[in-house]
Length: 304
Image (cartoon, rainbow, N blue to C red; front, side, top):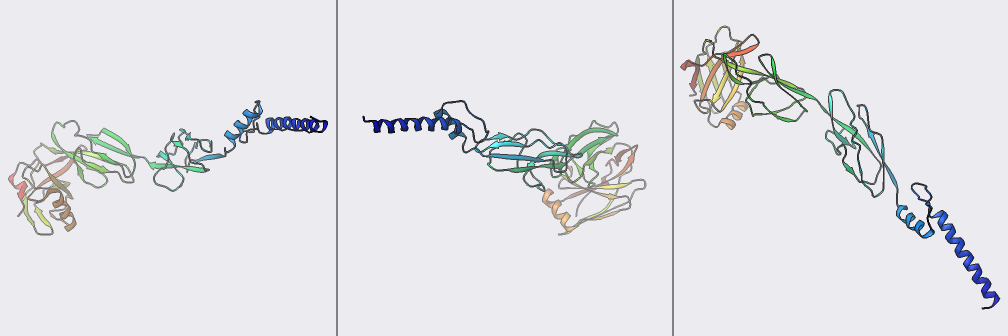
């Protein structure tokens, strides 16, 4: 090898060493973390290759009217993280989850859920109004539940038996209807209180039915008013034992009920043929609703 070739070979070796030395300094630098890896040039190139695609995305939390939003989180492209399990608070409401829409009524993400999307997002807390469902009997709380508007709850069982009464159902303060244990109730925008109602075994006068007649569109019932009652329950059934029934409630001044066509249609849908009616007067005694005990043959009637 002549002198000229040796010179060029020496220059080539020098440049090669210089190049890999530069790689070890420059390419060992993690693009995302800005850290320098103290490794050989080849290992640094591998490390750089594993991190070169690593964009960082931010998850920001907004309490949406509440307090205590979680701190923001960061994730690298391609990785999955668990969303924060820190729960914000809002007086009178329950946290149900998060959504990318602050006005959403339903949530998209739950606390602690795995998140893997590669984008910056803001997650807003979604709140559900807290509604209290309370069941009272004889001035005592029998049961209390917490629910939200739109929830469907099951009516609780009968309370402990009254010494002078027969349990007839739970009276709702929202719509005035009487619900039986096991029935479903859809929660509205506010809480509701149910009071136990009792058919009294005291010697209360029976209510006499004067007329019970039906047409294709309605049923008309007339009865003789009884002094001292605060109102009346009108029971409709397809059998004489009234196990399956629909109950209407009217005030003390009423002595006649004519069902609206739409109410009659609903009743027929539930009972099929509506054949029998009975009427019970009620009044409140020491905070407890008592009803006339049906002992008279005139208190119930087959509908003509």
